[in-house]
Image 1 (cartoon, helix red, strand yellow):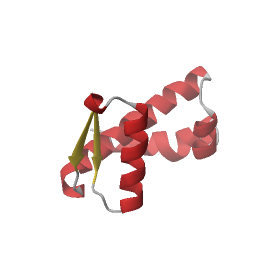
Image 2 (image 1 turned 45 degrees about the vertical axis):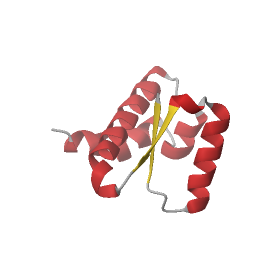
Image 3 (image 1 turned 180 degrees about the vertical axis):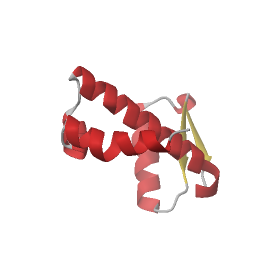
Image 4 (image 1 turned 135 degrees about the vertical axis):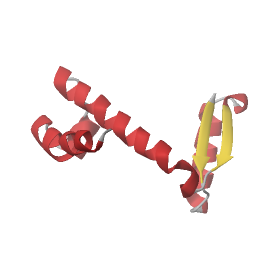
Amino acid sequence: MIKVYYDNGQQIVANALKTSISYALSKEAVVYRDAQPKDYRLEQAADLMCTVELTALKFDKGTETATDRKIFKNRRDFRKNYLKILRRKQF
């Protein structure tokens, strides 16, 4: 089951999401939920933390993707500008 949370802030984005997801997946596999920022901030923070930690593992193993390199540049810059800052804020 895939849950899609979107606040329908931009109708063109909402339409693109629904069209592409419906095309790629069975209609029974997708649940659309209304999302308001106040309701999902914690989930966004957790997602960011997990993404940064996963990217750290990929850089450590040398399996980073072209997208990782495009966004984060290289291992050194990633660790300095993202990973170090994130880990200081974790509790």
